[in-house]
Image 1: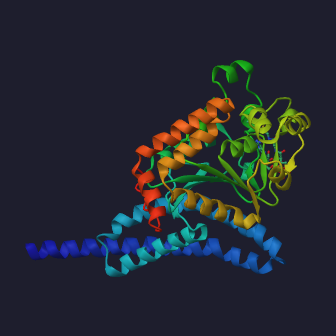
Image 2: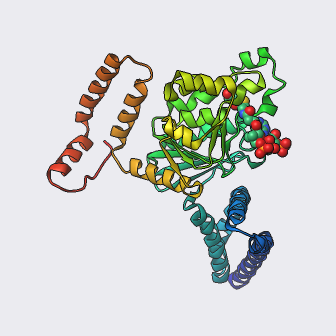
Image 3: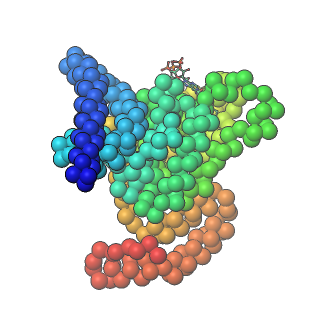
Length: 369
Ligand code: CAA
């Protein structure tokens, strides 16, 4: 009897292995079919500029396909536990294919399957949020913004993450609030629902946020970038508050943050005329902290995030809080607030460690407490 049971078990195992082999083969064929036309297009691209544009599009497509792939491999992985050595090897190679996506973005794919408008992934201690509505130039729909808020709060609560980068695509960081979603709304609707009210969540995030901007950062896109603590921009990035051309004004802090960042005269010119301004102007006026070649913006933003995340987290949080207080307080109140925060940091082990390490001429080991 035991012998028969063993036979049945072996047959069941064989069947499950064949099933997994079948699924994995299909996955390889699908991947090949998806990739083959890309190889042809890449060969036909006449110059590097064309190839770069194409690669940006390809990357966008890969990022959207990733969610589907993730679902499939999440399904396959548990099956691999009971499978044969060959099946395990095949599944391992699919996982490796997955890591290739990771290598492409140099990150660890961990996007929440419930997100449909953004992709999240961690790069060491940096949480990356990629806005992902390519067809609408990353227009910031309510659904998208709820996902951004959710991801921001998750990264803020994650003790393994020390900084957050928000980015879009090469063509658009974000072309503003979703005009199609707004166009038919009545005053009663937007007022009662406090439309755009939830955009303020990013201001409660304690960890440093960095915007890596390429392409259009218009209207709400410019406002989202300005909500971040630091902006890195690609050399072709284009900023603007064109709401006046839609018969409205900026509604997510544009008039307030722009005037603080670039002064009254320039803010008036930009908002009243609706003219866009270049990354170079933005950097000259102090809105953007650095301009980089388009293909380096994200890498450099992540690198900066990593540098920040490797420091003492409570000190970083205090520094961010103190700088932001400058927008709310008088100089005297602000300096008082800063001094009190500075004094309070002497209760941290990290203060003892940081200063001892300097005196002992060694690298500090932060414990974040
Ligand atoms: N909302 C909804 N859809 C948008 C969008 C937006 N803000 N911006 C672009 N799109 C859509 C377009 O409708 C188009 O979709 P279809 O293919 O379905 O027609 C697609 O994205 C591509 O856009 P274009 O064909 O217009 O691309 P382009 O290269 O010719 O122009 C652009 C690019 C200059 C950014 C132009 O799309 C544009 O002017 N967009 C609107 C910018 C704007 O006014 N932003 C402010 C919005 S209001 C706001 O943000 C209020 C606030 O304070 C929060």
